[in-house]
Image 1 (cartoon, rainbow, N blue to C red):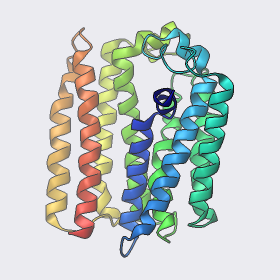
Image 2: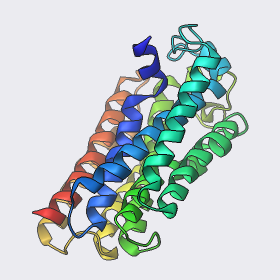
Image 3: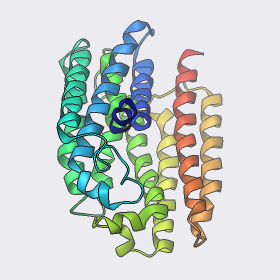
Length: 283
């Protein structure tokens, strides 16, 4: 049963959110001490609770899709009541931990939860373009970390990082869609495959990847990093690597394997950018 609860919490996704919260805190703080654990743990717990709540909301859709039919709720490994109690506990704990860093920190944490479960999740049933407003969810955790460090939420550096993560999420999701799109159609969800051909969607995704690279290279302009040429060179080389790898989208094969490989590479790219910004701050 422990494994089922871990699956319900979507540990890998929520860990990424916690990492971005840690980066936001690190970039905003004058020094990093044990206090960084509060926004990181709070975002992680809140994210796990939100993920569990999401699976409760989408259990009927998950049962129809090949890649999700074995999740804890559609497979019957957990009951709705067990999932609800688990989600409520995690959300309460997450809010309690974030509250230790102030009300604005809790407010941004709850904004992410509400946007995911109240806005984005129902919107997926309405429009195939739900990912565009939904991408706001991934932009909020670094703001949680930044404000937990005592900084204001509308300062240039954190807005630049949040915007980068916002734009990054759109091609990140559409690459998933390019290799599992039929699953979404089987579940009855609106799918971009009904609006665009695979070739068209691949090209649109490439444009969004270019936009992601542009937002990355613009971050130093808004005060991220200490202005060193090494950081700019690393960001430039990382972006050039991603664009080179993404060129396959301009001549997509019928086999979905290249899309899956590029999905992994765009994740590596985001991680490289976050690590380089953090290293630049403290080294």
